[in-house]
Length: 184
Image (cartoon, rainbow, N blue to C red; front, side, top):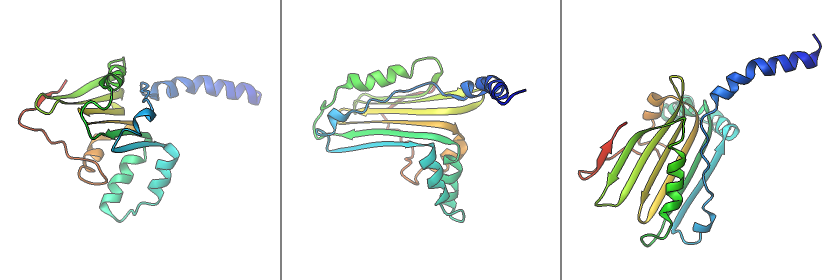
C-alpha cells in the first residue's frame, strides 16, 4: 500500500474518533464595544499549547500546583469574558442571553440554574459530555452591573476541578438565602 493510500486509510479510520471528541460549539462575542464603558474588563483566551506550557512551569512538589496541573493537562482551551460597570443596565442583557441560548442546543446540558430576584442575578452552569466524560463546561453569570461568561474546553475531571476551589481564582459556590437553585 502506498503512503498516500495509507494516510487516507488512517484519516478515514480515525476521523470518527476525533469528531466524537469535539464538544458542542460555543461562540463568545468579543464584547469589544463594552470595554470603554466598563470599570473593569477581563478577556481571556488560552488555547491548548499555552495551557500545556503553563503546566510545565508548575511545581510538582506544591500541592496546589499539582492539583492545577492535573486539571489543565487535558484542557484544550479556557475562555473568559467578564465586565463590571458603574451603573445598572450599562450593557445589553440580550447579548448575554444570546450566549445562554447557544447553550440550549444539542450537546449541552444545564446542571445548575440560580435565580436571585432580590439581587437581579442569574447564574447558569452547562456541561457538554462525550459518553461519561465531561468535554466542556460553560458558566454564564449576570447581574445589573456585571456579567461573566466562562467556557472551558477539554476533558474535565470534576473531582480534580473541585480541589481547586478557593485557589487560583476558582471561587467557592455561595448560595444566598433568597436564591432559587434548580439542578437538572
